Length: 497
Image (cartoon, rainbow, N blue to C red; front, side, top):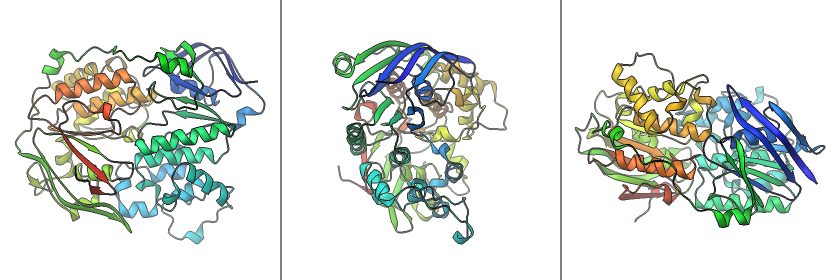
């Protein structure tokens, strides 16, 4: 039985044709992975399968009444305006006061959401939840979320948040589950939890269609569709595809002449990038960081690791001055206590180039790629009010060329594929040539070629004793070879190496 049929489907998104002449049948009992390079159209193909985007030409048909039981799992908080408002500010997840007002995981999953800022709970009357306690327990157990049910959602780690979004979709009891890069940001344990969950779902008769990388195809997948520049390049049984995967690098190595323009960072007058002493962060009864000590000399290259929820993002938020509990802790940044007397949050940020997993969510719509990269000079999210100098304009174009996004320079950032957005945000982190680079899971959404190329760029830019690096990844193969020091967190504590 054919569940979904696409016949010569072409799709335009914004001002570009992103899919051309797609003909593809999905039969009952099949589970599909869609692979391909960044910008090949994977996410758009998922959207039209889920009925979220119209086709320009051709025909798509769903078996009756399948269309109502297809669920495209969310990648962000846009599924609900209250949740979206609760996550409005980039720093909010680190504010204890704000987190206490944010909805809990239980409230989100059971649709018991009160407007953000509700003071008197009795003033808001909610309809009874359609989600039974039994169903909530089943889904949260499947995704290892039960212990987090009463936590404010803004305190969840990136990986925990992704599992929450998937749980929200599963509670709708879909017949077809559509996933876009579901493994991004998950630690080793969480990836195994997801693989097992998908296997159980397929045994219950749920059809899985997912965009993923060639190296993250779960065992339940039966077929693979390869996209290239918006067209089907190949369709193969999963076993045949796995046997044929041989990675070759298509990106060129970084241009030495372009890299030479980076040179040394402008600010190098320090001996230690940071010296953290007995750092503690606590939200209510939850100890997020527990007496963390970490000292990084200028020029050292570090990898920060640990499972989802171990405190990595909170630790980085102390360094980047995004966490208000920094004032209650003892540390030096660039040899000055808490950034130095009179130093503002912007003085600290000016010396740091930062990429985070959720940063793309905070850029206003209609912000061009050029402005997105240029906003790195001012540590803004795409909006700034200072006029760029000629040198700054040249630098924007240089880093855009270096990371192969110059051809996108006039496009709106929101219109790019997730992989393209990651490369643009990497350019934003590099544009001011900072002495400290903090790259928090920078390769999420990048295909294997782009990951290899980006690692070579990081290695080249960090090939100086004047630049310091903190690199976070759950994948050892994503860590650049320049990294020589390691810090691992677990439950907020530093593990002895």
